[in-house]
Amino acid sequence: MRPAIEGWFTTGDEPALVGSRCGSCGHVAFPKETVFCKNPACSGDEFDDVELSRRGRVWSYTDAQYQPPAPYVPRTDPYQPFAIAAVELPEGLVVVGQVADGFGTADIKVGAEVELVVEPLDDELLIWRWRPIS
Amino acid sequence: MSTVAPVTIAGVGMHPWGKWGRPFVEYGVHAARAALADAGIDWTDVDLVVGGETVRGGYAGYVAGSTFAQALGWNGARVATSYAACATGAQALETARTRILAGMSDVALVVGADTTPKGFLAPNAGERWDDPDWLRFRLVGMTNPAYFAMYARRRIDLYGATPEDFAAVKVKNAKHGLANPHARYRKEVAVADVINSAVVADPLHLLDICATSDGGAAVVLVSDGYAREHGLTDGVKVRAISTVTPTFPQTVLDMPYLSTESSSVTPAGDATFKESLARAAYEEAGISPEDVDVAEVYDLSTALEQDWIEDLGLCARGEAEQLLRAGDTTIGGRVPVNPSGGLACFGEAVPAQALAQVCELTWQLRGQAEGRQVEGARVGITANQGLFGHGSSVVLSR
Image (cartoon, rainbow over all chains, first blue to last red; front, top):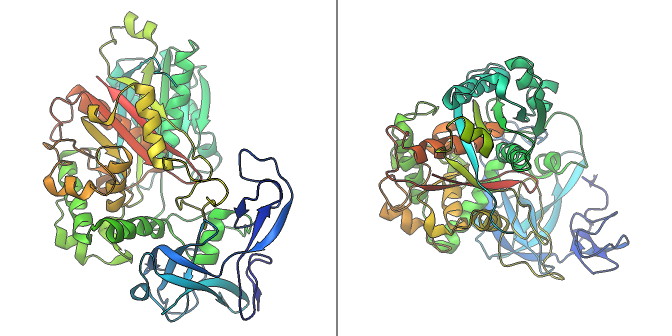
């Protein structure tokens, strides 16, 4: 199994999203910047990798009760709905991900704390997900 | 920015929305001819055609301005084509207005039309690991309704809105659109119908979310000189077209991205992107929200109509449900919203939709919106938002 996109997150016991920090202005971005800083007041073009906080608070959430169209690849036949959360991290940005396997919309609220986990996206690829902390 | 000189709308026209399954060009030409007939202007007088691009018609769709010009019969007019997702029509209108204000065009025809597949709007085929619009489906399964649902959930958790409130928006818009000859859905809907329809993306039901439709809309703009020579000076005026982009950092989750920009180094500004679209429109028109008599807003979902009402400053943040419950946004109320029936009755025909909003407001301000007229309306505003930082707000006045 390998990350769906190399370099977007670490794996292991304490996985984390990997963003970038601009060497000039310090702006943190995910997905990471490699060429231009998005800060209009900055012309920085050198970036350091930075692991983002593993815990954040739910900005909002929903689920996919209808099967999304391709390029989404369903994991089961018949299709099983899954929940999605947008999570605000201490670095001041929101990152969307599916909710961890075994959890649904009933397990989260706006403002609730969640933690990043890495789980299979399909038979080959790994993806980040948000797991409720209870 | 200071106020901008008004530009006259000489004519508007539409092809009815539906699921007709014909090439987009047919809808566009139908709408263009209707708009020219409405204006009483001959096609040979048109010196600029601006097309709203569709991504669903092959090459002809990418060069829509030229496609419509050829379909109407080459007349030597200059052409331009705009693409700005859901704001395409407004950006096309802005191209026409700008050229007229620069004194470089007398009669400009703006056309948008689309033919759509059934179901979720999805990215084009192929593997594109660097395309955010592809990645959101591949990595997360994040459909457009999933974004709408996240905004709706926040209204519930932060402002005490209920699924029944959202259903009431659908009920209202369904009633508004009953007599609209261009609407696709003309049928009354009850709150229970919405609540009992399948949940697509919690908390939104199937009837909370707009369909995708075929349709076409067109607007004819004329210069002051042409309007005077041809007795068109009484026409409805375009007072503002706001197509501003977000400002950094964009801190509100927005299609098609899976993340927002961090506010840790640079704090967020005092207006969200959608608020800034409206502010720029008001500023350019030299009016304020209290001056608005009628609004056409992008109800991609029922709950999004509520967001727009606040973004347009028609009430304070978190108070749109109070307006809804009081009937303020119904025809006959303080500030009717979506008298056309909105996307709830039309479904979305992307490059035509922002123009359809302008067509409706033109009819409203002329007093010609039979069966759905907002009595005495003198000032109207539109609002919409699309992918990749596109959006628009257009102000019209009589």
